[in-house]
Image 1 (cartoon, rainbow, N blue to C red):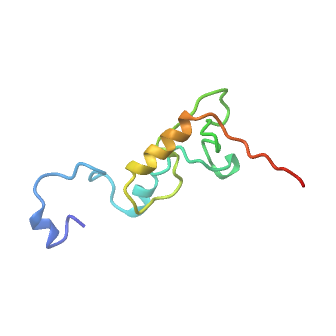
Image 2: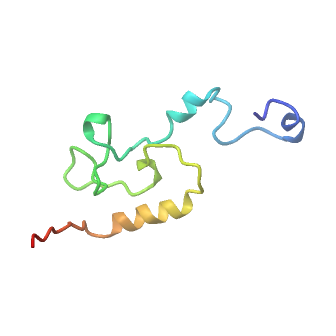
Length: 97
């Protein structure tokens, strides 16, 4: 987009993020969700408690666990993920009447 007018003449300097090495959407998409919270059989890296599969107690609490590109500012989402990583796991208890 930065290489087409009118943006091209308005941009000064070199693109820093994500950088000129990415030439299409597929390459860019591959850099998202590098530690996705998905089931292991769907190529996930962390479970719902943010624990890395195959480890004893290694957890990831940053936005790399988001498996999809999101159309929102990520700061608030990063705070929520950080809080989830800080808190002990909460288990749902089912009461039968």
